[in-house]
Image 1 (spheres, rainbow, N blue to C red):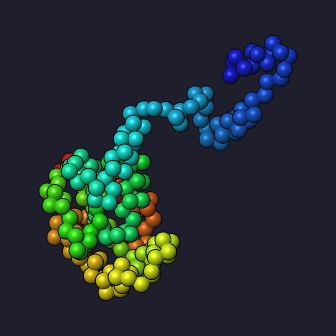
Image 2 (cartoon, rainbow, N blue to C red):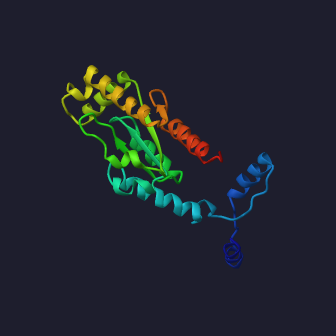
Image 3 (cartoon, rainbow, N blue to C red):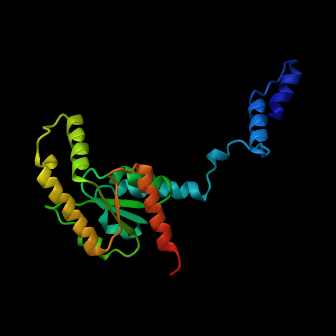
Length: 201
């Protein structure tokens, strides 16, 4: 800024800093002086690199992929198809948590490694069958696929949800009902569980 003002003076031009008015107004309103250190939102600190690493890990461990190194995850989300596992995982990754997720499917047992994990916090995501059917129907419509399949059959979906809930209960995994929760609310509840787990016993 100083070099710009100096150059303007040399050329006989007026130097106007339009953001000064805004900065002064904010300083007055917040009761804090501006630090005049531009670019801090782009700082490449340790937290930034932790987020990048978490995002890379999460993308590589979506939808049951990469179970060989699930132990490196901070969080593992389990749930039936369309229970918001992937968007919640990405949100958590942006907060710096390495997150893997796995779909729970009656016909396809999960890898046995899932039940031997020690490091990641495993969280079950559940939802009401009616809400799940609605979400799945919308998904099928967006893909121009037939809207009437076992994927959205009331009895089949009810069994699927019950199967997942039994698995969560049998393994003592905490469960979050995402029926009426936003992604942000679900993630906040999971982060609270992580913090609780990290508290000394």
